[in-house]
Length: 301
Ligand SMILES: Cc1cc2nc3c(=O)[nH]c(=O)nc-3n(C[C@H](O)[C@H](O)[C@H](O)COP(=O)(O)O)c2cc1C
Image (cartoon, rainbow, N blue to C red):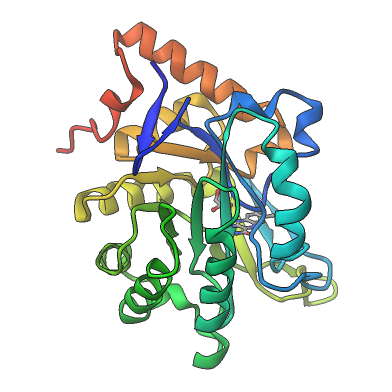
């Protein structure tokens, strides 16, 4: 009833974790068998280890958070050596989220991951492009198409391209990723935000700005998934503020073939399990034999 197919990869259910909110799964394994999830998406990986940005790196907002973690991770080699064998103990799919600050970085990390034992690669294109003065790769359609097509040539693994919402028209970027050879799109990454401490007149985040996530961004994510699903012919992983099974069903009706739970995990590590159980119950109640039947079924006016 819950199994879904994403570009030839079968997930036992459409629920996965959002990159950067689940580490490498170790902490959550204390709560439940990680094999309960359709897939686990790991913390964003870079070629070299990164300590991330200077703290404070998290700021609370009503119904969400801002983060400027800055891709803290042990580097791709350590991930391959230590984390993949851990994750492989569980009956779930592994998604490796990869980042770079130059085209060469992206190509090198893709080559490494192509021979690693992961099921799907997710290209995070929200990273600042150091050669283009720090503008994010994912904000310019031509850059997205050339990055995706260059990465595409380096791997036979199914390629997810993760879209940034910090653009005027996300469908242009989605089409560019499709033209470059993406197999799947995922969205949304975080929305750029800022908070200020009014006593010190200093930004709360040491990085000044950060990415907004959590329930407050949910309607924006639903809108973008809806628009993108009508603009391209690719499966979509929908995320951004999902905290209940109702949110997940809504996101799927907007056009997502699978969904990811991120910030909600910080309040409730069991959130993805409850989301999965609720989707199953809803399908039963609605007489749906496979969850894919609800994808894109919103009836717009
Ligand atoms: C603390 C934190 C770290 C994140 N790190 C990454 C990352 O490394 N790579 C990435 O593609 N997205 C990263 N994200 C974005 C999430 O994967 C997700 O796209 C976003 O938070 C929206 O979903 P949510 O509202 O359910 O958290 C991060 C989000 C948070 C809150």
